[in-house]
Image (cartoon, rainbow, N blue to C red; front, side, top):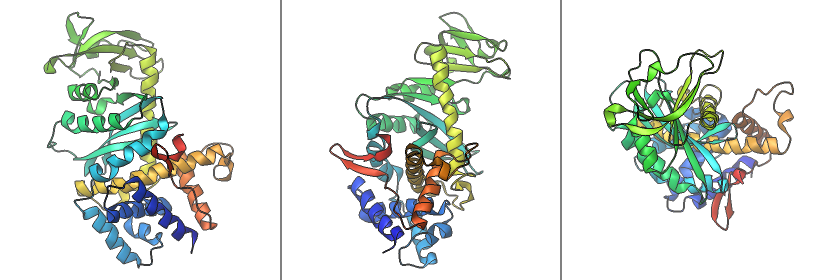
Length: 371
């Protein structure tokens, strides 16, 4: 039996163990799809099928993957939410940063992602796929609130989290959803000259937020209220305008303003690197022909599971001092996720079996590389 066949069998059994309440065929389908994406470094179904040693022709296996994408019983709620405790159990009693961020999927959709920042990557925890350029069927708060509650409930006891969000999708709904989930938040606000957002500083008269940033080098920190049309939301405002930058950071938070909020918000930039790993620089997500919103969500089940596995394998490369075997010595070209995918491919080509991402502990299954 080849290393790929043994690894695939062990991987499917592991996913069945992590998801004991999920129908076996669906758990195996998720495991199969995720392994194929990791080994093919692609979401193109024929390429995925070609990497899977299951004793079926590539067209037959491609049809099996298409049935997974078409199955209405395959949902984020049924297959991914039960994974959250296992993915997050290894965090222990830490302070972690969550990020809510939208990313486009071609011109077809917007993917709303809640992820956790670990080292230099944003690892996806929950997501919804919404139509692009049209009115959404739900308000943002109704979409985000259950996602944040599920993530907060899956955090290990003693773990605290802060939610970051960029100015692309900002409104009172994000504030309300985060507060309902018990998550402190840091939001970057739109403060361009054409913006009409109103603000009150420390109970004073209302004014245009755009009038507050005045020059590079400016710093401001103090109590404030925003979102007048929603009845105001009280919090704290931080203005941080670095010299040499064309625009400032204007941050609204639940906790006292100042440099600590700026340090927290800097971690939001990790999201862009992860999207590159999913898209042009990695799995080629947007090369997929999948266009229906529900099928995009199902495709992301496998993509995100492959992403977590690749991240763990990349972290293992660093911890064992083997980066020089896969990356340039004079600079770092490969991200952790690409390192993991490259190391996985080499191991399989040499007849070795790379480690699986989960391990069983007395507390339950856990993602092995967070401990």
